[in-house]
Amino acid sequence: MTDYDPTIEPQDDLTDEEIAESVSYYAESAAEIHPDRANRFYDRIRNSIHDYLEKKDNVAGAAGRFLLIVPDVFMLLWRLLRDPRVTGRDKVLLGSAVVYYLSPFDLIPEAFMGPMGFVDDLVFGVFVLNKLLADTDPQVLREHWSGSEDVLHMLRRVTGNADSLVGTKLKERIGKMVR
Image 1: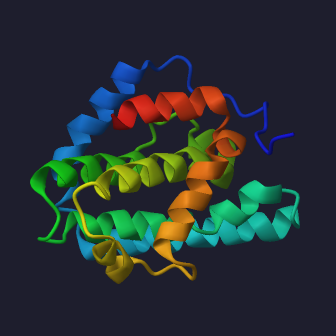
Image 2: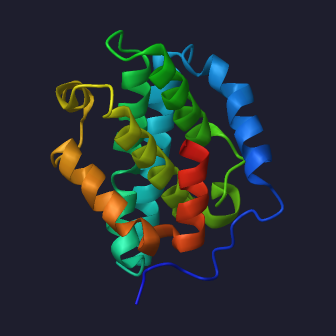
């Protein structure tokens, strides 16, 4: 049994190419996001998730526990985007993940799903971070991570639960977008 909610419908009217085009269009400006804007976004999603989980009183299940790390993953992506030790090619990938968080055009839109719409953002961000590890020392990720558990453990945990968070079909679609 999975925690995936079949009532959460992905944006099937958007093709992978349209989503990739939208993300690419905005990715160029992601590196120029002002720290205040990133912090405001972090605070807004953290408060939104906190309020949602309090109202749902654990009805969100396992997905609720994962929602709590969504803001920390966003900040990690944004901090790595600004780190000079990260390669330019990886910064493009990080920029696309930051924009995916900020963009209203994604597979499970927050506008319709509320905070549960961030689960695809989380999976996308984690897939990007896993890919980044091929070229970046894990210590760099640890330096920028503000979550409570080790960042590498978090990446394994989210990756291992991606099917139950977004479903197999969406997980595969996100994987293609990251490749």
